[in-house]
Length: 468
Image (cartoon, rainbow, N blue to C red; front, side):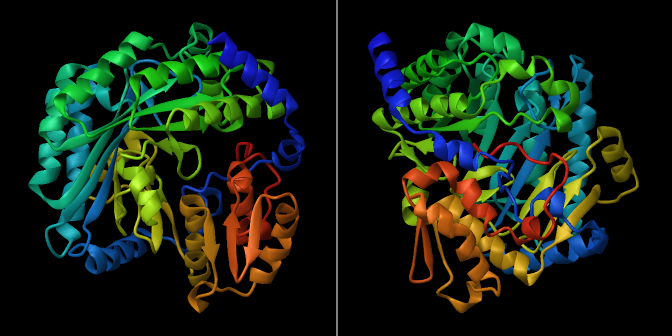
């Protein structure tokens, strides 16, 4: 362990981090294009949203089905690194009313669909989905499936907290069709866990990982985060070594997005100087990435790694990897419906977000209305730029050789990328851009060159986390 640490520290000290200083600027993570701050809410309405999701449903339900993202917002304690929409409570009597509301929202959609939906994908996110009892999760999923039917190649997944996911949770959800689970680990350091108010021991993570495998889950994922307060290079190496011993099928190695101006007190449980920045932060990522690759993981997309046997790696190799508000997925559908407070839906032609406040969400449903409060209708230009950004994020390459993917400003984009080409981050040839191995670190910056809305209206306030 110490030999590995000394070797990595030496190699990292020998590296030049001038590119990090050059390109470490605020930028979007591109879970959508346009990004949420650039949605045109003036041209959006619930009726427009209904028209676009119906169009998408008719085009794709029979051929591929739809995806459902279900947001379960409750947590028993506040994690101070978290940027998600959540409600902190230890009162579990909130479970039944919330499930009833989500099922009512689903009923409203099913009453609009012209035929029974084919469900290809369900993902339970949060918040903490395992805040809910196994019995209530069964009520939720059974209620969803009562109005739809599973696709032949369906994929159901959920996020589990290692400290409160029970064997019964795992068994119940498996029996309902869930075969993939993601456990939030972040970092195993006691000091880091205390700072971010997220405590789970290695024993907790090992226990739920082994349970999942014994039950029959085909993919177990761990979420790790670098750049957390008080996190050191030794912490990251220790966390990766422990992760290696459990051999998850895939994992995310996220950059901590420090955006306290957006999330208020949730990210102010520590001082600014406690958070690693710039070169120091990048060393954490480089060390983690080297160890992951050394231990048999392949880099797929931004911040994600998988073993060769995992379906996400196979989707990456086949060119089928997709990215949306749920992150990366190997199970793409054109239509994704978001259920629950703050959930975001995507019809490909438009985005729609539900009321963020649970009380407002309930009120809209009591009026028998879809609880959507804002969104964006994609213009033809948006659809073209969205495709390029998805290509770069999912395949590290994009092309405008097909006239359908060309647009008037492509020459300006190429000019903007020439400096990155000189720095060895990408190659430009034959109407194609390909991100180099060196450039994968800077894929967000490369995507920003295509972001016409960002270029035309650069923010004068803090909107995004740093790209690196």
